[in-house]
Length: 211
Image (tube, rainbow, N blue to C red):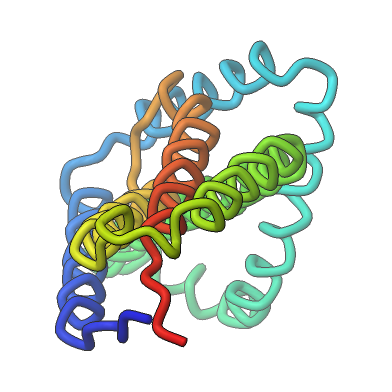
């Protein structure tokens, strides 16, 4: 069995943090709230067309996830309302508070986006699970038939498949935090999951027998 490369994990984690920081910076300085909202609505509407009646359950579950996080993050924000009301009358502080209000709204929308996409991913995992299990089982059967034959399994090929799996999982993680996907966001989760499962199937077929 191959041991995980700590350098690969470190590199992927750094890349994930870099993309997260880039997304936050883009959201703060470049993104327009109306465009962001419109893009997310387009993504949700595209999911409705793709999923059908079950889309309402996905949206409801996403709202439940969002409300849990939102209640934790914004539980104490209303305690400073008196201070904020007085500060808004002070020139300079008023502009700062207005900017912070807009930034807070963007951040909350980003949290809701992630919550909705997690709910959407959960839906696709449940729906596609029978197909996923069948693909993985086919990979196992293929490995069973060739594991004792010389040259049919390759540790290098297995490592290559595993690296591709890691790349797809990394890209799937980016999907949760990246603003703006529009209608393409509805197709991304099932497409990536199918690709990942096929890659897992191929990796299984090249597991070398070491016992």
